[in-house]
Image 1: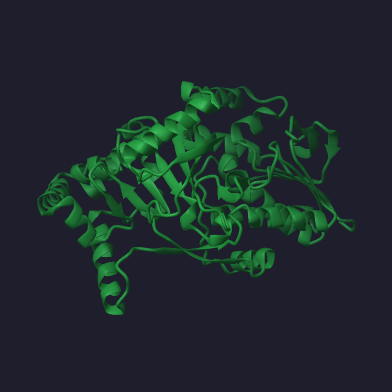
Image 2: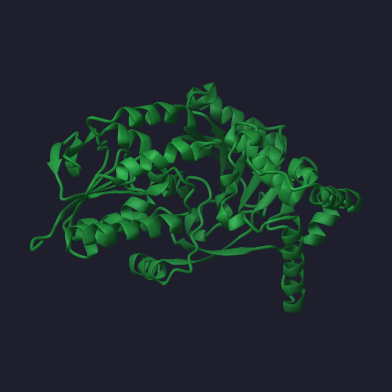
Length: 457
C-alpha cells in the first residue's frame, strides 16, 4: 500500500487510544470514534471544584520495554512514581494492604489469627475437590474462615451475586499459586525486608502516575493523533460495521457511512457481532445466550468535598463490611499534590456497584449524594469534618461478570468475529476480560502491529 491507509479506531479508552497513537505515529491516517464526551474511557480524569480526580483509583505498572518507552514518549517528564497505601476497612479496624503479619495479628488478635490458620490446614487435609467456582477456588487456597472474613462480603458486593455463581477463571492465571501460605510468607518477607532496611512500617506500592491524573496520558495520546493529521470524534457512536463478504470496509456513524481500510474496535463484543449482517443461526443463538451470560456490573461514583486535608492516610479503602453499601472509598488528597493544588479540602470518591437494571442506578443525583454522606458519616472516615458539595458519575456496564460457562458463549463469538478480515477486537469490553491499563496498552500495540501486517504497510 503506497498511500497511508485510512484506519478507524472505535473507542477512546486505553486500548483504543494506544492503538490509534501507535498507528498515527507510524504514518496512518487515523480516525477515532468515541461514543462519550471525553477520551480516556474508565481511565479519564475530571476537573471538579478546582481539583482533578479520576474515576476511582487507577494504577499503571509495566515491565514491558516497549510500553515503558511509549509511556515516556507520551508524557515526557510529566509523571512520577506514586507510593500507594491501600487498606481494608472492617467494622473493628483498618488493615494495611498488602497484609503485614504484625498488623494482622495485632488487629485481628492471636486467637482469630490462629483460627484462620487452623481452618486453612483443615481445608488442605480434605480430599482435593474439583474447583468450578470462584468460591471453590478461594476456599481451597485460603480456607473457609479467611474466605468468609476477607473475601466473601467485598466480592459479593462488587459482583452482586454469591461467589459460588462465578467462574473459577476469575482468579486469573496470575493467581494460580496464591494461597494463605504465600500470603503469610509474603507478609513475613515484607516485614523482614523493612526491618533490615530500617524502613517505616507502612506498606506501600509504587506505580507510575501522570502529574495531573491518569487521564492526562490519554489526553496527550489524543493530541498526538490530531497533531499527525488524525481525528478524534467525540459523541460519535458507531451504528454498524460496513462489510463486503468477509471483509470490513467501513463504519456507519452519525457522520454518515465512512470507508476505512481497517477497523480496530474496543466496543463490547456481543453488540459488535450483532452489527454484522446475515448472522448464521448458531451465532444468533450465542448472542441470545450472551444477554444472560456475558453480563456486566455498572459503577455509580459519588464525589464528596470534605473540608479537611487530613482524613485518613490511605490512598483508597476496600469496604469489607455489610453495614454500608459503598464498596470502595478513594482519597485523592493522598495521591499527588498537583491534583488538589492549593485547595484546603479533600475529595473522596465513594463507589457503588450495581447492575444497570437495579433501582440504585436510576436514583436522582441528590439521593445518591445524601446516601454517600450518610454512609461516610457512619464509617467515621469524615472525622466530623463538614461535607459540602457532591457530584455523581455513572459508568454503565464496566465490569465483566464471569458466570460459570461464560467461555462457552464467549469463545464462538470471538471465533466468528475473527473470521472477518481487516478487523481488530481489543479492550475490556471487546475481549470481555479484566484488563489492567498496561494490558490494554499491550493489546493496543499488538492491534496496531496486526493492522500494519494485514495491510502490507
